[in-house]
Length: 475
Image 1: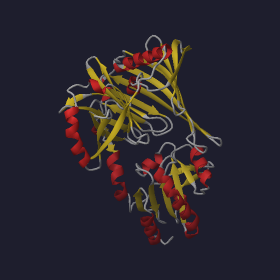
Image 2: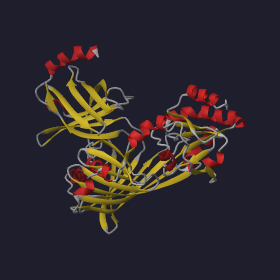
Image 3: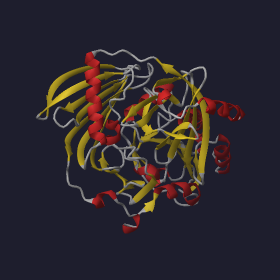
Image 4: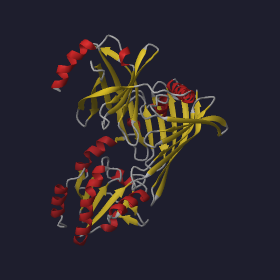
């Protein structure tokens, strides 16, 4: 940090009272950067807009644009992602590079946390594009402008997600309905593979409502960050991609089909209504990250995509007091203390072979529940110990059960690949996870022989778990 204090005053002398020298495309000097990877700066209607991408898998995440302003002769831009906020400062260097100082702020459990980071970026030479690509980019920019200026609208859609590898395949189908009211109010009701939910962004807060349990979560609203409207408003700013284009009818409308090929082998197709410039269908493919991983294919079909609809303002508000709804964040935060000593809620789930396992049928044994997922790295790190406990202590009266909300084909394939024999239960609607107020994973819960919870730990500590197993006389 001392380096920055020395460097910035020198840079200030070189910073012109104009944002024009920043225009263009900039790439992180470190190709392995895990933060911001690319920045573009452009002028539009007298404004300077800064567009950033960040490292994600399989392709970089598009974080969108923000207007840049001069603060003490330094160009700054801010992004609000709800509970996460980012400010960057752009400082041209005498050697032609761009120093980017990033300030990240995110809400912690008790107070906001801050992280500062500085990186150098190098200017990228403009890429020459042909007339066909120019026309396709212009179309995508027109679609983006349609969504940026969208009046009240409604979208009903079905998303189908297929995951597959050489050994197995699974399918998830989610049905959603979204209402949009400018500038940043959203209501999305979703049903399908997981717990039914209603997402409401009221312009100040983002509410996730769970009607079945009468619970909710609340976070700062982030410029409709989760809405499909924002997603499509970013089209047209795609980077060095390969485009193809054709025309095709879809549900009675003539559409322009734009196919995009990303560098990482990811492909995406969009069916764009020629009259309304609304997206009617999307299809994408992500190749498997390795020989044992899963390829992911997604298809979203919009049965309704209509702008200019009449919406009731009350659809974009939520009052938990009206139904005496409980704050799920507070419940899950208190769960490790509030549930210990109480009788464990009973449940019945299917194992990977389709057989029902009921907790109450295991009374008389100590039961260790491990809530996990195949994509969770800390969960993966804990599994060897969980496997050891299953094999080594079952004769002592310990029943180990892992609980995963993914399709059984996914968790089963993962466990088989690594030779795990732990009994695994599928919790597709997260009913059992919600019953035990599980939010973060892995979560380990130990139930004694009388059916009471004696241990509840978010994350994993083998030492703590060992001590409580000894106390239960199963170690």
